[in-house]
Length: 396
Ligand SMILES: Cc1cc2nc3c(=O)[nH]c(=O)nc-3n(C[C@H](O)[C@H](O)[C@H](O)COP(=O)(O)OP(=O)(O)OC[C@H]3O[C@@H](n4cnc5c(N)ncnc54)[C@H](O)[C@@H]3O)c2cc1C
Ligand SMILES: O=C(O)[C@@H]1CCCCN1
Image 1 (cartoon, rainbow, N blue to C red):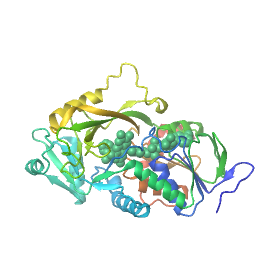
Image 2: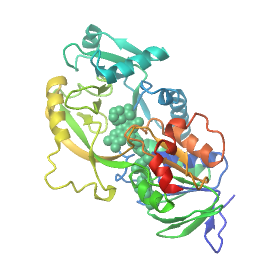
Image 3: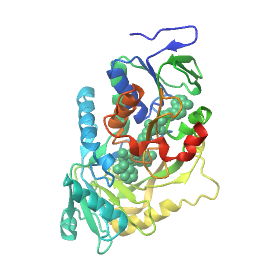
Image 4: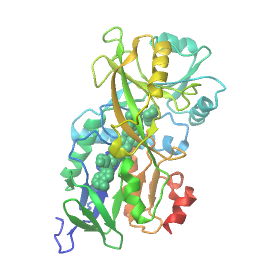
């Protein structure tokens, strides 16, 4: 059914704010369910100012938390379905090495989770790791897990594909249109820089900008936008660390000077350049992302130099390219997927804490189910707003 133009704003069945990967998947699921859906994006698409740009994101089943591991089989299936429908390749299998040290608490958490599930994640002894992956020279006495089905997702291409399918399912995508105000109610209203729209349900998936939209709705969530440096390192031997080489994605845990972990992916978006980054950043206003504070000496880049120099002998230990991206972190690193505590027809998807891309097909489905008032396919208890009592008090 086409959206109806009314004196108080064009009417839709659902409005989604934010055309990053989470909002785009939420909108796609709503449109697939026959809902006349409007997806609003403040920037002209494509853009690189949020969290979903670039050409590589890790996808893995290895997860220390059950609530994510349980969603991964369906997420892989939905990515496959998207590939088939869009007729484009989004997933490349590379495997994932999880590097750590026996007895180190974080690594043990991953190891116990892998053992409990008896799934696709196996232990790798030091000799096997050296033989199969000579490009890695981890610490003495180190240990490894191997997730053989893991790989990478082509992020920009995936975002384009899901937005295209959303449109093909009858959805309306309006970019370059910033949401300026939300009036709650049974039929809520959304005002933008270019118009006014009404709908009985709203999904807010505004990434690092979420707090700006939620504060006027009485909700103060502990969301911290972080500027993250994305560093690329040149192979010493051309072609040695590409997608077709025994150079998998990796995650190095429990490093004394890098408590949040260091990760990497084979050369993919730029020929000969391997992405190796620190899984953390510095607090930032998302509109000032590209203006680092004076005196910022990039301590993350310094620790990456040391890591590359000692553990990845096939790479030049100086970054060849540096880009920026945004994380939006919660204090516990878990997502927020919930209804607004006071306005139940407003659903929030936020705080993806640097690990949300792989799960976006399932996250979008959950946001769609929550906004349709249905029982979600997976328990959303770990993602609830009530785990932040301060936010609730402010809202009610
Ligand atoms: C460097 C980096 C590496 C990562 N690596 C991985 C990985 O390996 N694996 C993995 O699974 N995940 C990874 N992630 C995390 C993943 O990319 C994010 O969790 C995900 O992209 C978050 O998507 P989003 O839709 O919430 O946010 P965004 O992509 O930022 O989308 C939010 C959108 O809302 C729009 N918006 C905001 N306010 C308004 C408004 N008022 N009006 C209209 N539009 C608005 C914004 O412009 C933006 O486009 C990584 C992230 C980064 C930055
Ligand atoms: O979600 C992931 O798999 C990665 C892990 C390392 C940091 C970035 N995100």
